[in-house]
Image (cartoon, rainbow, N blue to C red; front, side):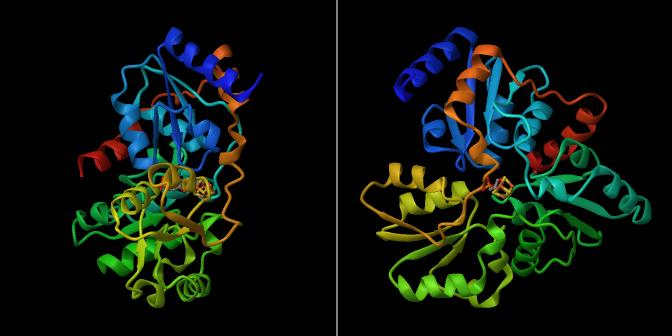
Length: 307
Ligand code: 13P
Ligand code: SF4
């Protein structure tokens, strides 16, 4: 089957089955092109909560499909691939949080949304890279906070908000390579460009980068918005390379330069167009979170959406 034939068949199946396809910016371009909604972690969670489709086919890594299943238990949530992991989600378990809470009964656990349902079940409030600053700023001043699992995102939040937190020692294996030297080199090479950096990057607490006038920290959706609205013509992109597909689609006359060709999330790329078609045809693989874990986990997402 050609790509076009697959895309046509997917469109037909979506209609027949009242299915919606949600995809993250890090998926392959041909997968992004069949999505009804393309977005960052925050946008995708919001979309999963408001769709009236019967089936949500989630194109992303496993924790994202789990999040959709937590938010929409009455929908059939499908993932085209089993075993698409994430180094952040795998860095912590619910059991470890349970232990911490026993030792810190008055403490609050803030979890980045890149966590399993089990971890979310022991979390007080979730956040994404798009709302992390607002979420932490809204928490009571007198509470001890444990921030999991991304130490780089946590360090960035501490720097920007001034709020002290205990940070878990996890990181994204993709953004971990974006350090201060890499950003300084890019800034010297492209002095006219804005540098758009994901806060999962190791440089997100590096003063040299934080003080650069043309460096901005954003979630992926924030980058897309900034590039679209900015009068600048050139942008250095410090996040997973899949994002450049949307950036270029929105602004064909602007130039987007990846800060490194190594910024590829192999787990996100496991989702293929063939897999999407097969998932719709066979209605596989179903992602369902059992009770009471789901009800416990949804509280942390509701707390985030309320804030
Ligand atoms: P956002 O979707 O919040 O930009 O995060 C990127 C990411 O790494 C998702 O796994
Ligand atoms: Fe996880 Fe990093 Fe891949 Fe996002 S880019 S899914 S945080 S490993």
